[in-house]
Amino acid sequence: MEQEKTTTSKSSTGLDENIGGLLAYLGSFVSGIILIFIEKDNQFIRFHAFQSTFLFGGLAIINLVIGFIPFFGAVAQFLLSPLMVILWIVTMYKAYKGERFKFPIVGDLAEDQLKK
Picture 1 (cartoon, rainbow, N blue to C red):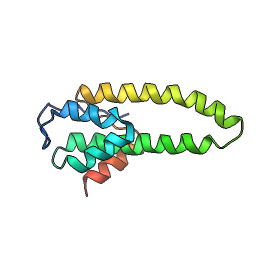
Picture 2: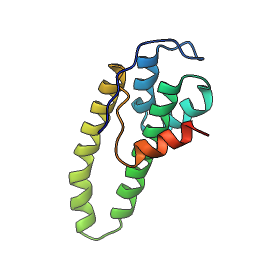
Picture 3: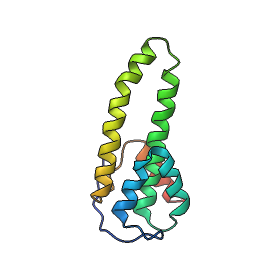
């Protein structure tokens, strides 16, 4: 994971950056999608919204697909679920602390979306 510390400032929605970043992860990919549409200016919040959407949306799809695999799927879901909760808590904490950390693959996708 790559990290970069930012300063706290307001967004176009009136939220502090760190609160907006936390909210991007709070509702998994759903809150990420909502923030993508309502936050127009703040690049910190938009980055975390895109990263949340790609990260947790992708994990939700993977979790759904492996659920169809007999026995192995149930075991994999059992192991994946606590890891997703830990990841969810860590991402919210780091965003609240003002860190613009980047996960492999999804972080690059999120940065690419900001350039558009």
